[in-house]
Image (cartoon, rainbow, N blue to C red; front, side, top):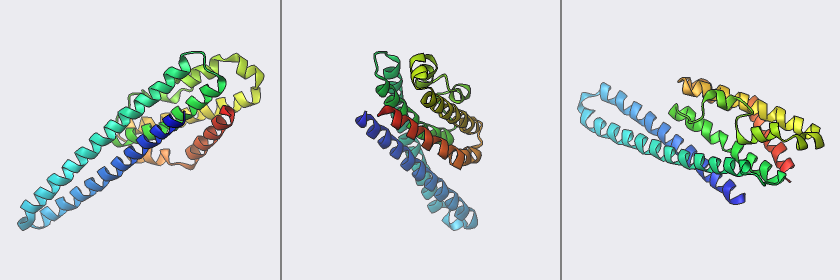
Length: 203
């Protein structure tokens, strides 16, 4: 599990770096465009700079897309592992922790690209992901540790409800609103508490 955590962290860092580079390139392109309109003598040089900035945007977008694909593959592996049967309870929670940690990067990609393989309705439901299906179906865990089950259930439900709101804004072109929601203190608290609950349960 530690290796996969490091892989997710690396993919997340790549996406964040690509996003930052792309935003910087877009800003540079906009500044160059302003210079072009202000001085006709600099049109040729500005055009070259704009072209270079555009190429940077394209390269950053491609890098981010590649990182997103890798991230989706990692999350897919976690889902397959949970759903394959024969897993201990600790393994299920550890895989769920990793998969839900990856959601931060998935949402960031959706905000920047306006695209996500997961439909909004699926993202906002807590019984569609592999861990959610397991949590709702495993009566033995609920019966043996009802308080812990309820806490996990509530946090997991809140997490997906908030993720669904972010994704809905991202896919409908409301980028600023999506960015505000993904950074909102309420969502940050939910993510922190879910991480803590899954970490404690996985021990």
